[in-house]
Amino acid sequence: MNDNDHEHAPPPVPPITSSSADGTTNTAPVWGRIRDEVTRVFIGQADVVDHVLAALIAGGHILLEGKPGLGKTHLVLALSKTFGGTFQRIQFTPDLMPSDVTGHSLFDMSTQQFRLRKGPVFTNLLLADEINRAPAKTQASLLEVMQEEQVTIDGETLKLTPPFMTFATQNPIEQEGTYPLPEAQLDRFLIKVLIDYPAPNDEQAIVEQAAGAAGGRGLNPTSVQQVCSPQDILEAQDRAAKIQAVDEVVAYALNLTRATRTSEGISLGAGTRGAISLIRMAKAFAVLQGRDFATPDDVKRSALPVLRHRVALSPELAISGQQIDDVLANLIQTVETPR
Image 1 (cartoon, rainbow, N blue to C red):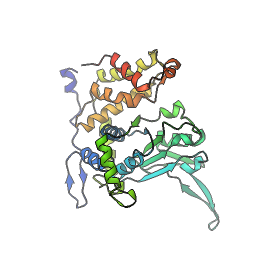
Image 2: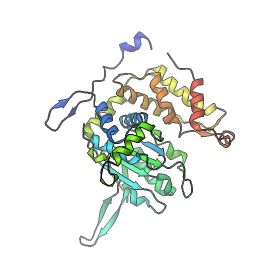
Image 3: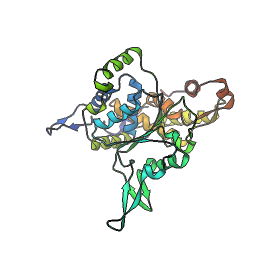
Image 4: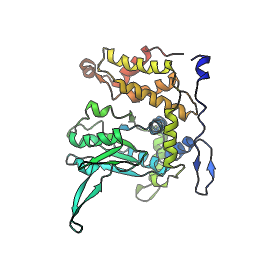
């Protein structure tokens, strides 16, 4: 980046403000307060929370993968409470129908007319729990709503109220009776986040606080305080889109994406949407840091969650037991980072 780049840079991004119940305006950056509220009930996993916040700012969808009982539902519900958004959860099962997701028309005998019954996708944050438990036709019912933020029922197109974000969860250890998501649908998710076991100290705090209420209902996400509004989230998404990403940063994202297509250890590389997602996430991380420009480090920080579900290992590496993250981490080191 040279001095001439700064001459045409957009004005600095001001901190996002939020209004309190008494009508006063809080000018402190709202993201820190959202993070504080979420981590009250989702202890530890700081990188997971930061990636989720960045994806929310970028206006993308998240594929969550982790073993049962690690707080995935807590995380999404707590996040919805911080901005007063609506939350719906769908348990995907083999007998789930597309109409159970999007909604359907039914005939009302009293009025002798068809009445529209909206499905759970009409919300702000949608948790598609164990999405790979449902067959392909039910998984595909989310394609339109994830891409266009609209649903078509019996020829009528209905727009969702933004912001809208899908969190789809997968269990990495149980593959029997599952239907793997096709590459075209995986590509619709901005990032894939892996939730691992918490650190020992964090796990002890979780156990103590969860067991400290009747029925083990401690760490209740409904106790999270609202710190901003859905409109604040939409304004943040608009500002993130206007963050400056100079040619060198965009070229770096493209070089990382192209490297996945030529690596001997990868049989399926990332497409152009992968590069777009890298820049979207880099801009979102810039907003979280209070900057008006994205850096190569923002792109590098985004690389694993953006690319890990967009590539496939070659059969030789897959058989050897190597993990996608390890291969990608080595590949990222081979791509020159611009100064």
